[in-house]
Amino acid sequence: MIFAGNYFRCANRESVRVVSSAGRALFACGPMAGSETHDEGSNHAEQEPLTTDCRQVTGWICWRSQNHTGAAPMRVLSQLFANNRAWAEDMTRREPDFFARLAHQQTPQYLWIGCSDSRVPANQIVGLLPGEMFVHRNVANLVVHTDLNCLAALQFAGAVLRVHHVIVCGHYGCGGVLAALRDDNLGLIDNWLRHVQDVRSKHHSRLARLPREQQRHDRLCELNVIEQVANVCQTTIVREAWKRGHDLAVHGWIYSLSNGLLQDLGMCVTSDLEMSKCYEAACIRTNDD
Ligand code: CO
Image (cartoon, rainbow, N blue to C red; front, top):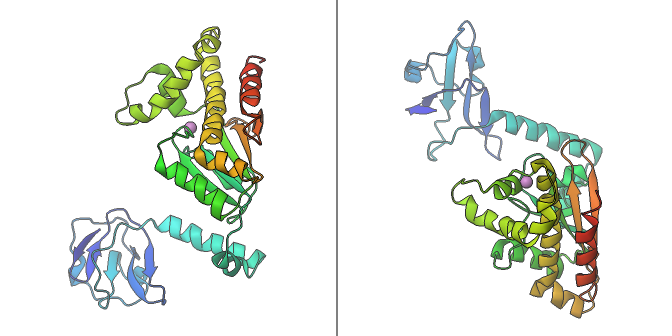
C-alpha cells in the first residue's frame, strides 16, 4: 500500500477495515462500485475522505484515519483477521468464559516439541484447545544441547507449568530430514540440519540396508525422534527433575502426513535408569518394518 496524505493505494485489491482496540477505524480499503479494475497508477489522494467503510464509492480506494498518527501500516492480511474474528466468536459461543479463563492462567499437561512444518499443527492433531499444550517447534524437531530457545521452553514447562509429559513428535515426509539425508545445500539451514546428519551417521548401518530412498527417509525420521528423546532425557533440566522425584515422562512419536495418524515409537522414558534400555529397544524396533 502506498500512502498519499490520508489515502493509500492498494496493490492487492484487499477489502480491509482495521480498527483500534477501542473500535476506532484506523484505515480501510475496498472496491468502489462501478469499477471493474483497480487502477494502481491512479492517485486517490483527491478522493473525498471516508470515515467508515469505503466500499460505497467508485474504484478502489484505501483510507487512513486522519486521527491516526502512527507509522504507515504494514500490508494487512485481511483474510487472517477475518478468520481470527470468526474463530474467536465461535470459541466464545461454545464457551462464553473461554478467553477470560485462559487469560487468567494456562495449565497445560504436555510440552510438545515438534517440527515447524505447516502440515503438523500440534494442538489440532491431538484435539487439544489453546491452553492445553505448551509448544516448541523448529525445523526437524531437534533438541540441541546448546539451543537456549528449546532449553528455556523445556525448563519453563517443567519448573513453572509443571507439565508431566514431554512429547517429541517427528513426522514422515519431513523436508528437513530429507535435505539432511540427501546432503542438499540449502544455505544457513545446512548447519542446523547437520544435527540430523549426525543421526544419519550414527545409524549408518541401519539406513544402508534399506534399498529405497523413501525407506531411508522414513527410517531417518523415526531415528531422529528417538535421538531427540534421548537428548531431552540428557538435559540437566530433565535429569534434575527426575532427581527431585518429579513425575516426568518423555515420549517419542511420529506423525503421518498421508493419513493424519500418530504412531508411538515405543520410547517412553520416565527415569534416568530407563533411558539406555528404552533407547536401544526403540532403535531395534525401527528395524521391524
Ligand atoms: Co518436518
